[in-house]
Length: 352
Ligand code: ADP
Ligand code: TRP
Image (cartoon, rainbow, N blue to C red; front, side, top):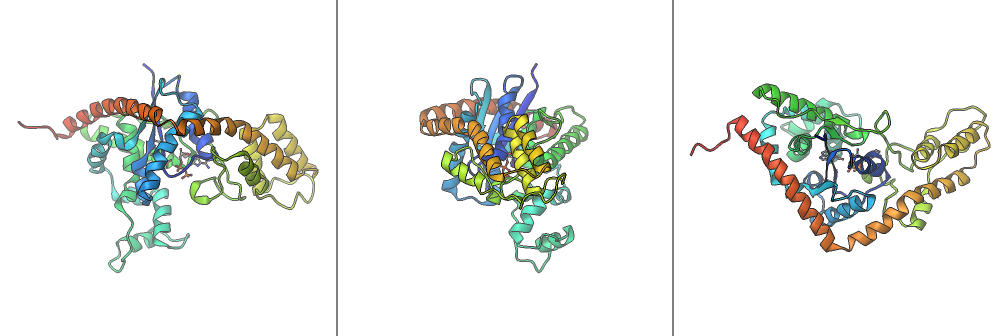
């Protein structure tokens, strides 16, 4: 029997190169060798209170982007998270085995809570806790944000997934998922949930950098190249990417902004092209204008065909509905089977 792979992306906007290399391209390459399920996490998007109309549109958009990138609904199950209500029920049951403390210590929670509360970057766990539960505090962090990892674990465990292709930023959530699976299995003395692991084609999880010289490419960072970007927009973004003033002497290590561009090149350009620019930096002959032109060209080779397919598929409401319906049916059937087992194990069964 094939191993099960499952992954999802939150419905928070168009997909960018970070999503593509961190997640989506792996989905496409895995769909033949695994029993595959890929979904759109609309419930997770609620943790940050999106505008309802925008959320509704984003779900459809992401489905079109999945299909345009090459996920084949005949080979993989593509579905919308909220189409599987069994997930919400298992989320309630699983929360009975999840500690508030372990959720509060999750990096993504601390980060988002800090932002929602408007407190300093260097605030300690104690400071955050005081802001949240202190009697003087009138600020609120929603409980959905705290229990985000429970919901993610349930997405994975309800399908008994073995492999979960995600970017580096999601590894802590996977670690929690394994912990919850182990805890449930040992508490009830069952072997119900497998312990899932990340999946990469190379030897480590990918982190796609942004164009602004700093950290990762991300929707909230405003430093993204989107799969849907047209040629002109994309070239402009790449040409404006932050660099440095040029290497001052031969043999210096790459500065952070230039290293970011080289990382993007490693994902999109031929190895000899990357080597050429590494050498040019080392001997101070590098011209950033040329490098960016080349990079834009190589990114476009990947994104333009996808963009064209997105535009086509996005308008085909009937096709999108068919895919969603088919996916929901398959995903629900499997989820319902797991939920029935969990109810039985936990004693939530009818007495009449
Ligand atoms: P964003 O960070 O833009 O909000 P999501 O959190 O919705 O994106 O991420 C969806 C998937 O894409 C996850 O598997 C995540 O790990 C991956 N991902 C997002 N940004 C990057 C990035 N810059 N590098 C690698 N993977 C990424
Ligand atoms: N938390 C993931 C992200 O921000 C999205 C997600 C929700 C997910 N449930 C999942 C990813 C289950 C993999 C498996 O990107």
